[in-house]
Image (cartoon, rainbow, N blue to C red; front, top):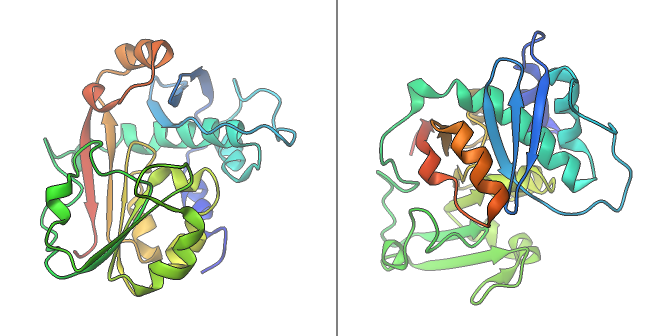
Length: 243
């Protein structure tokens, strides 16, 4: 797998006739609105130590703006993924599953599980869900109680038969390597930063579990005010290969 395959697939499916109309920078989330009103989010990821590819993404064709997913300016990469998700996830209605959870239908009994991004207790995964696993390795880029540093993924993901990855790994560009390390495991991408693009399943991903925004205007106002979940303004979608 090429290091850019994940991004190339997303870029290839973008239309020629949409532009970025608005960007909203929230405490935890970056949101983008396209010229047709479609709205999407990506985790706000800080880091502007290098120049942007585009000084201003507003008004850019979506196909052009999407290229900044590969920017090493993390603020810009967050904006680009939010714009890409505005296209894919606003068209995810056919994949929307009310109350669907990341682990629905997944047998965890006796399995070795890797989790990139500590998501237990947030959203829809609980400590009880993992009580039956053989081993659970949780890794996170931020310092969090009980989580290994994300560099531990190099050591532990190849040992796992199920790997759960936060969609925000696409922003910091660790996603391609995480998928490579997980090539012998079943893989689930989860969180509001996940792009609902079925073609991503060709990369060895077994499930995409993200969010389809149903109350975009309310969400745009709320994310500016405080650190919060966007789940209350959206419904989950599931795109499965084979679990």
